[in-house]
Image 1 (cartoon, rainbow, N blue to C red):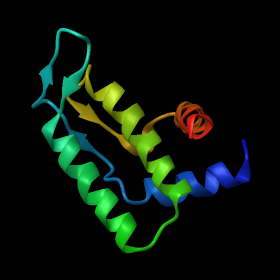
Image 2 (cartoon, one colour; image 1 turned 30 degrees about the horizontal axis):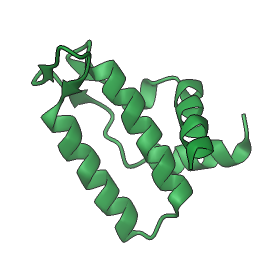
Image 3 (tube, one colour; image 1 turned 135 degrees about the vertical axis):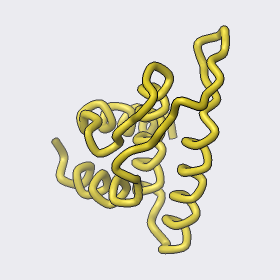
Amino acid sequence: MDRGIIDRYEIAISFWPKEIPVADKKLHTNGGATIPVLIAIHDEIEKEMESRGLDDACMQMDWAIYTVVHQLARSCDVVKPHEVDVKRIAEVYKDNDSET
């Protein structure tokens, strides 16, 4: 895996808690979900990253982490961001990067 991706991942994941309780959620008929605690945590992470002046690449990595964590949170009550497969996050990051 590209060293730059690993570096961005390590920076972005450092802002995430080790464990997030996500039992309080609303599953939608279209397959989506609203997970208030996850939204609140991510909002705080974004604010902190912006306040530290992190670049767009790190912000994109954070969004990739959020995307994968959100996917997992739809089907469990506790998600552990630091245990998510880094390759899966890197794939989302690369997909998002190619769209910009």
